[in-house]
Image 1 (tube, rainbow, N blue to C red):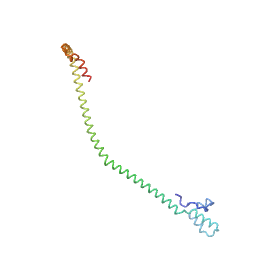
Image 2: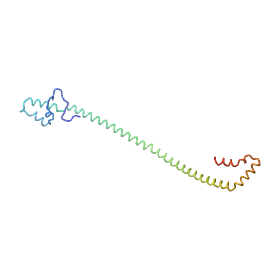
Image 3: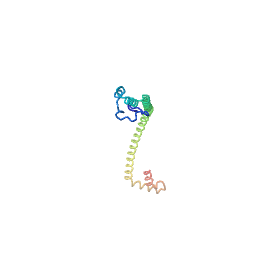
Length: 174
């Protein structure tokens, strides 16, 4: 936008004026036009200067109008973008949040079951350790008896009892 007081240069007018005449305010310009005591070339020069410095209202008004319309268009685009974001936010809040809450409640139930399962596995592990310790103690206490029993069962011709020690070791490893 051009500053007030300046207009588009018109061909053949205002060319060659000194800088002091181009920067006159409108009151000084009016005094130059009204002063009848001055010679004719000064008055005609003042008129030409006045025409040069007088803005063209149609061109500036059109430029201001285009600028305002561009700003209004941008404002409308911004408002539509804000409305779209607002509606997307509302959709998320109305549709997705309840679904997420339901999933969270479902997961809490699953977490509780997993915690119970972990407690059960821990309890079973303690019982297995306890029973294994008792089995080892029983094997140590009754080791001589079991070897004699194996020899006796092995001599009886039963092949399943011939490898009794390996069978027990096989059961422990699995």
